[in-house]
Image (tube, rainbow over all chains, first blue to last red):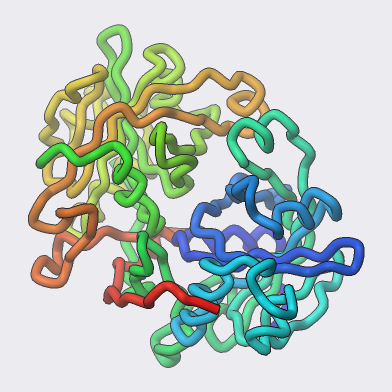
Length: 191
Length: 191
């Protein structure tokens, strides 16, 4: 994973992939799947996520004021479904990372475990907006560091063509996904 | 286009496609591309869009309190780039619909032109949140009607396999897109 410019961080999620959100607080850590995520601004780099009130990971986000985003691939779909459909409280160890042997790397600018084998990482600090958080479960955050796997993202661009299993994925509902498909380019229009 | 249940409306955009947003107010109409859109809630069905302050379409949204979302396809990418990169003020007619011969259908529950040949339509009423709108260019809206092309969306599911040119598309940056790729299903996990 290589650092990428913060002004390019939005490009990791601009195409709408499902992401994994992890957080750490007071000796606890957790991770969840988040389909409802999107960029909010370029500079400062900001993003939005929707985190349900019942989620344990949200409690850790509220406690620490920070979270990590890992952008998973086609080869990690079982992990996406596992961490997305089961609560840590249902597990004997009460820890999703231990239960599913999820290898992680510590974030650099915040405290959060980032998932290995993902193709992008975003380190985020929550911008406190209590009304949005309580009324809409909506969290606004600033991206303070960003990394991408240079095999599939370099010079500010995704390029999955030689790495089918590293393609990102898009969630619809009920366990159904789309793989990120073929890329194409359209020149900017003039009148 | 057939009406779909409002509780399924989020599924039209859950996978993160770029959409076209249109609005009408005081005899003016306009349309723009919006990559930054996502669902916010199931019931009531709500969504989020980011609309830059310089956009003329945003002014019409602010005036009318409503907007339409049309979900374009692979075959409409030139329209996406045209309406997304050129302002109506640059056009001789000052009207994107006239300039590019965009055929539309009137919305049913609000006043807005919906783009023909799209595979989904959402009719939306803005939920007034002045702080989000002024600070973040962020608009929250309730979806009051939803329609989809039954050739590619039925029983609450997308199914593009027999309709390659009707696949939705995902924007990255600088004129680069991904087509919505192959679908797959993962069973919900149990511990």
